[in-house]
Amino acid sequence: MTRLWNEPAAFADEMIDGFVAANGRYVRRIPGGVARATTSPSGQVAVVVGGGSGHYPAFGGLVGPGLAHAAAMGNLFASPSTQQVYSAALTADNGGGVFFTYGNYAGDVLNFDAAQERLRGEGIDARTVTVTDDISSAPPAERGRRRGIAGDLTVFRAAAAAAERGDDLDGVARVAALANERTRSFGVAFTGCTLPGAQDPLFSVAEGRMAVGLGIHGEQGIDETAIPTADGLAEMLVAALLDPAEIPEGVASMSGARVVPVLNGLGSLKYEEMFVVYRRIAQLLEEAGIEIVDPHVGEYCTSFDMAGKSLTLYWLDDELAALWEHPVDTPAYRRGAVSATERVSAAATETEVADEIPDADETSRAAAQTVRLAVSAIADTIDAHVDELGSLDAVAGDGDHGIGMQRGAHAARAAADDAAAAAAGAATTLRRAADAWADRAGGTSGALWGVILGAIARTLGDTGAPTAADVAGGVSAASRAVTDYGKAEVGDKTLVDALVPFAATLAHAINGGASLASAWASAADSAERAAAATADLLPRKGRARTHGEHAVGTPDPGAVSLALITAAIAPVLATASEKGTPS
Image 1 (cartoon, rainbow, N blue to C red):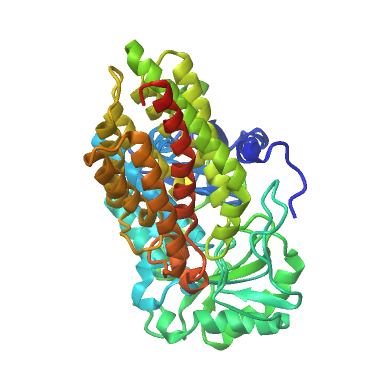
Image 2 (image 1 turned 135 degrees about the vertical axis):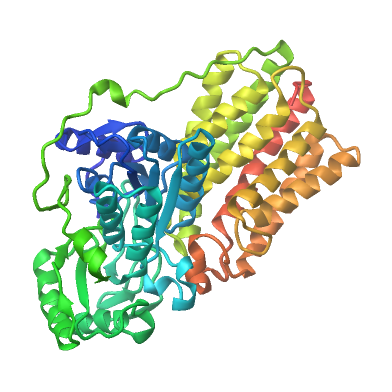
C-alpha cells in the first residue's frame, strides 16, 4: 500500500515537483507536465506523450534526448486535461509540428484530440497515434478499440527516433503506426494498487489467485486463476502472444523473426522474480525460432503499487530495428550515448496567459452569487459521496471517479469564489469554474464537466438576469455538446443516460410555464431514475466497455454523479427563487 503522502489531492503535483528537482539535468517543469531541459533542433517534430500519473517511468520519466520532447501529466490515473496537453505541446513545438502518442483510453483521447484541434486552429500542425497493444481488451478484429499498456515504450521510441532522424510529421506518424501494429502485450496481477489516502485497493484478488488480462489502472481482468509457477506464468504469457491471431501482419513466419521482449513489472514485484520468469520466456521464444533482440526486464509502465507483470513482444522489421538502436537519454531509460546539447533558458517555460474579468452589471453579479452557491453545493455533495462513486467505478473501471470528481468540484468552487469576489458576472463565474474543473480533474469526467458547465455559462451572459429559458437552453446545449464531444448515446451506459432525460425534462417543464426551481427539481428526479436504470445496461463506451459484463447490475458512476449534482443544485435554485435572487 502507499504509505507516504501529505494531502492526497496534491500528491501528483508534489510528485512532479520532486521528480523535476531530482532530474533537472533532463527535464524542466512546465504548465501541464514536463519538457526536455535541453534544446531540440529547429524544425524537428516534437513528440509529446502523456497520461495519468501513477505509472512511472511513464510518462515523465521518458522525456529527454532520443525520446519524448514533453509529457502531459495528469493526476493519479486520470488523463491530463486539454489545457495541460495544449501547454505541453506549445512548449515542445520546434516548428515541425507536434506528434501525440499515448495509451488508448477514453479520457486521454478526448483531451488530446481537443488539444490537437486547438493547435491546428492556431496554425500548428499535429498528428496522433494511440497505442493499442493490450490483446486482452478487444479481439484482433477490433484492434482499434484496444487500450495501451507497456507497449507505450516501443511506440514512443519508434516515433522519437523517426523525429530525431529528421522525418516530417507524416513520416513520424507512419513509423509510430507501424510500431503499434507490431506490438502486443498481455498482463496479470496478484494484488491491486492503493492510491494515496485510500483505505482499500482499487481491486483485490483472493490469496493464491491472480487476475488475468487486466489494464494498468486497476481494471478488473478478463479471468482469474490460481497463481502458477514462474515457468507456468511464462508459458501463459508467451502462449497468449504467440497465438496465430496475434502475429502481426507482415510476419511471414515466427522462425527467424526478430522480437524485442519487454517483461514489465507493474510496481511491487521484485526484479529477481521477473528474472526467474524471463528465463523461461527466453527459452520459449528461442524454441519457437524467434531471434531475441535487446530484451528488457524491469519497470517501464507501472500501476502505482500493484503486484503484477506484463509481457510485450515488439516484432521488428528492418526499419524498426534500425530505429530501435537510436540512443536515448532520459531520467528513467537510457540506451547508447547521446551527444550533449544546450540547456533551455528558464524564460522558455513561461506560457501563462492573463485572463481578465469582463465587465458585468449589478444584476448579473447577483446571479453570479447563485452560481457560486450552486458550485459549492456540487462540491459538498461530491465530498459526501466520493467513496460511493469510487466503489461504483471500481466494478468495471479504475475506481478513481470519486477522486477525480472531487478534485474537479473543489477546483471549480475555488475558481467560482474567486470570480464572484472579483465582481464577475454569472457567465464568467461559471466559465471560470468550468475551466478549473476540466483542468484540475482531467480524465473523461473532467473533460465532460468542463463541456457541460461551459455550455451553460455561454447562455447566462454577464449583463442582466438569466431567464429560466436561458438556463434550459444552456442545459440542452450541454447535452448536445457532450454527445458530440464524447460520441456516446443514450444506452451506452455513460453520464449521457442521465443528462439527456434531465435536459429534456427541464426544457419541457419550462416550456410549459414552470418556474426554474420547480422544473429543475422535476428534471433532477428524472436524472436520478435514469441513472439507477443504467444498472441494467452493458457499457458500450468509455474505459468500462472492455469489461462490460462486470458492470451489469451496477449503475454507471458518471450517470450517478450527474444525478447527485442536479439534486444538490435544486435547493439552491429554490432558495434563490424565494429570495427573488436572479438565477
